[in-house]
Image (cartoon, rainbow, N blue to C red; front, side, top):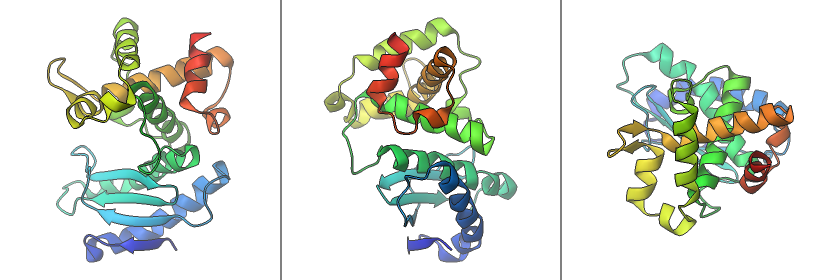
Length: 213
């Protein structure tokens, strides 16, 4: 079983633990450099209205999971447990966590892109926050260039961080960093004939260098 260090709503969260434990056992086979012990901290932070669940790589061995007890589609919420844990585990594997950093906007986008591609390819879910298929390549390239101009210091500002990661009111676009990152990662994989597991030990700077070649 998983090791839970905090409950937000124990009676609601407890039934999800067996599935979470199974998911972590599965992902360890793909990411052998994960810490031996991964702790779960249940919270109410960052819940996506589309799925009723949120995840955050808090530290090198702690994953924060948030579950909305009032989310109507329980089957959809449960189905997103596995991909969420795959996503956050990839962050742990790459040390893209709350205790690391700070990270520039483009580094942030690339780490999110790698985790998104990993959950898509190995958990079988292409979440809307990483789905760039309806966006033109021209726009994706433009977003990438804009993200490259934002330093870690600037990107740490809540207003800047929020609009590029979640919703940009001026551009009226959601999840720019995630979608741009996933596209950049896919471009690197195609160009170099790699899989996402080949990138699991790479830094964002390595991926950017591979894209720029």
